Amino acid sequence: MKMRILTALVLAALTAACAAQDAPTEPVAWVDPPEILSDESDYVISAATATVPLSPEELRAYLAENGSLIAFMEPVGSIAPPVDSQAIRGTWPDEGSRRRLIQVDGHQILERSLKNEVTDFRYQAFALTSGAGWAVDHIYADWSLTPVEGGTRFDWTYRVAPKYGILRVFMNRMRDNELHPFMQGAMDRMAAAVRTEQQTVSASSQ
Image (cartoon, rainbow, N blue to C red; front, side):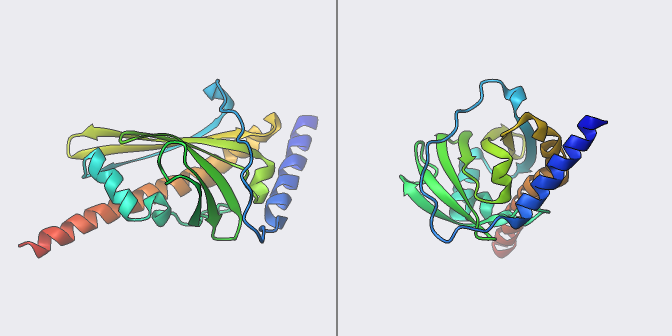
């Protein structure tokens, strides 16, 4: 009973923090990123997938030309999607490049590219300025593109590292109610846009 009450109080405090955090008025400076956790079970994991009628190379080119997945993200609950990015070092998504994401509510996130191969892209997000930054240490994410019959299976995985163990309850709930719908929605809209574009091209060529 005491643990339930404590958990409820922590969740209430976190919800209030998320709502009250003011967005920064200046670009957030680069800071040293947290270490990637060696034990994947320490993360709260959310995954989304879509099958797209393009080869892996064509899909990466399509995303590069159409604003990446950012262009297909929409708000879900407390999650405000990015609307802009600012280069800090290199050219995103080249390995070793760094950037700053600007969310629709003005909050910011730092990102670094860890690996950039056609079928295997890995990156880390951290230093969230929104209230979620009180709970999230970092996010270790990847894109996995697998050739399949009719195109490419695109798997997008988010591994969220809570700052405190007690927050796993909150993070699991957020994953189910907000993060997974946010991710899967972006994937579904992207896949639908690819199919619509192909249908338009096919119709115009007839």
